[in-house]
Image (cartoon, rainbow, N blue to C red; front, side, top):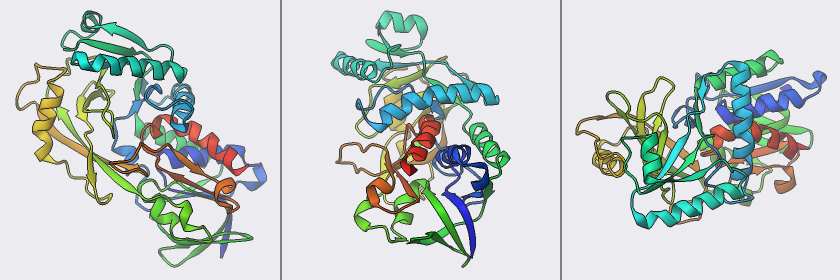
Length: 369
């Protein structure tokens, strides 16, 4: 049986950021580390099926991991992207109220943002917002200048490069079937029948993290949350975007509403919506939702023309709270919680996971200490 110092399961943006942080923290003599990815490429799951937004840290409850790690991770991400030449843009965004009944919600979001330390968020009148974005229809808005966008694949390639340059190996087509937690480490049983003994294991498997954790012999089942899957459909805009900033409506219960985001080429896309599904494999854009998108987008952009929306892509949020539950926080579950030495499970790494990835890496380092 081969033995290594550590393994990160999952080569999404969070897994790669965690692997990089652990490698940087490891002594030179203990850098025999692997990232095991079940598919044939890095970042093929949630990491490549999101809005690529660098969130400011506005929406999350004060003191939550999402709030702390988003605010910390945002600045880490901007610095890292600048240093590594990863394409990004601090374009800012507007959160808009389209009816007077939503103005109180904007005030609440402003208070939450300031409580989280995001003090550059300011309230705008409708006229001020429309001076910034003439095509916008609203009765009031918040401006978040520190929100941005990033090339998520470029980011993951940079993280992979840092990990590999320090001596780590990313092994593709390497699915883990189960594991056994022992006194001398954790034995990973691979789908191909091979076994691997690791002193440290981080389960960063994203959508399948709870399923995989259930396969860890020696980890009590009550430490593993139930997985829920919230699908989000995206539609792209044919033609040039009329907006230079991201446009978000007042948030919904399980998501941030059908918002407009831009890629680094200026292409606009709308989404995601929230569609609860039974599993992580339904990635076909639901064309039945198209008219809902038109209806929602026209609340803040009435000039959206018929036929301007084209099916884009869909992603799945790896949730650990259901449609009738209060939204769950990030769950970084280390030995202090479950008692298994050398094991960290990452559950519910949904938005703002991309923004928070570098900060999550540091949090995992601390969880193992």
